[in-house]
Length: 251
Length: 301
Ligand SMILES: Nc1ncnc2c1ncn2[C@@H]1O[C@H](COP(=O)(O)OP(=O)(O)O)[C@@H](O)[C@H]1O
Ligand SMILES: [Mg+2]
Image (cartoon, rainbow over all chains, first blue to last red; front, side, top):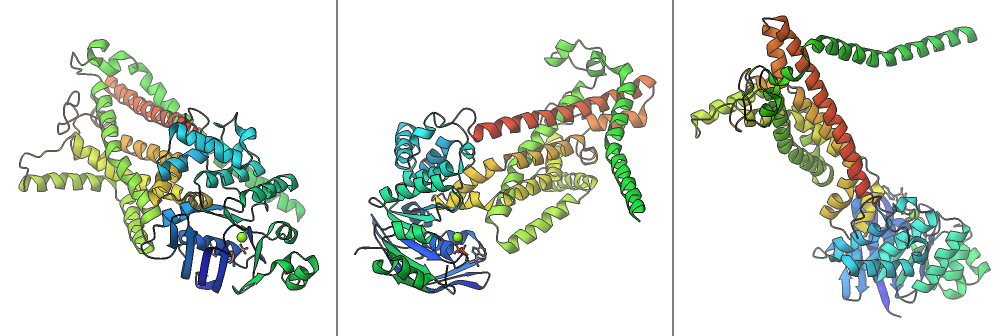
């Protein structure tokens, strides 16, 4: 089993309050790997520790080691000579609430391409279309690419965020409760999408839906309060009763 | 009890209405007064005196009695001061909001607030002292003039620009920053491609305030190069005329009722000038905002 991300003794504090304590886990390539835990247990924080987004909050302190295996070899996320922008391009993220940029639908995808890879013109448009198709959004937006992205519905916005991440061709995708803010139908669509993306990307999905995890997960970790991480075997989490006995007190 | 409570409430509502009416009333009274008093002098002679308008506008004939040179002087001042203050102010605001550490930010903010509190006559004196210093050191020919006044006005306008930029950046939703960084943009790319465009409205509000501040100031230019009769501004270092000073000068020293009427005319012109600036800025900022958010000319095509 090839390892995509190795996390060793990771601790994260916000304003001196410990959110993660010495968390260690190995996330395999492919997946999807699901991350379950009570709300406030630090799931989002753990995801953001992988692409170093916690650094955007001045009150945050991180220690420990995160090794990300990309197509170009292993990257020590927190090594002093690691370019954080490069790391974030290899590790894409989709946030819990869709955060489209206040630009047109097309610019939402093309602007980051232009900024990070200098790609523009026909090449960027081709890449945009490919990403929108991959996120199952192309047919819905092909005629309104110049409309503001905020005019899309919640489910469409979430898929646009996914397409935006995919367009940058990451190796790993972090998905923070990607269906939490969506209605049933939109959520179902995103779930189907995850099933298709798993063959091409390493997917790490935060979820609080037990049934969702049971249906889609290939690997599953549980984040306990206080930052302890527990891995559950497939035999446990595929079996509803067994899973409930393990998690009953948690969820 | 109930009755008394209701009485107090309606009294309060009445008072709020009166207070709210106060501002438009004062404004109407002021503008009306200005228009009535300026009316006798209004017309081409107010601007150009005895010189034919076309010749004056194209600069082929000098204007002696009109306020045209003062209008051009004020516009030049505004332009120059903006040219100096806008890049400096916006850059400082960006630095304070995005790059400075907590300590630096606190120290700089204090400095900016102090600068905002400096009276414009002090800034003018400072500009004057600067010329004296230059004369005694490496520029014995230095003299007060258009550029020095513009510098002083830029100093007066800076705090507005810095604070507007900084406040707007700081109140942007945190998700915007996070989205940008999450996509692997560098800090500069996040600032220049996301945060600054998103804060255009707030920043240009600051620009308008700053420009208006620069347009009406009299004290700072008094000591730094404005004169009553200079004709059209000729060079960056030359003396010039300006509307606020012209008004002040005429109002203080008028000899005939016609001169007083000209002062009122000038005041109305200054008012129209700043009013136009506000409107132009508003239109400009709306257009920019629309372009950026992709409703018009999508840049990807
Ligand atoms: N930006 C932040 N600033 C301060 N505290 C934070 C921040 N993000 C998360 N926390 C704290 O970290 C803890 C875990 O948050 P989070 O990782 O969002 O949990 P989850 O995603 O599992 O609901 C919470 O107690 C929260 O208050
Ligand atoms: Mg969360």
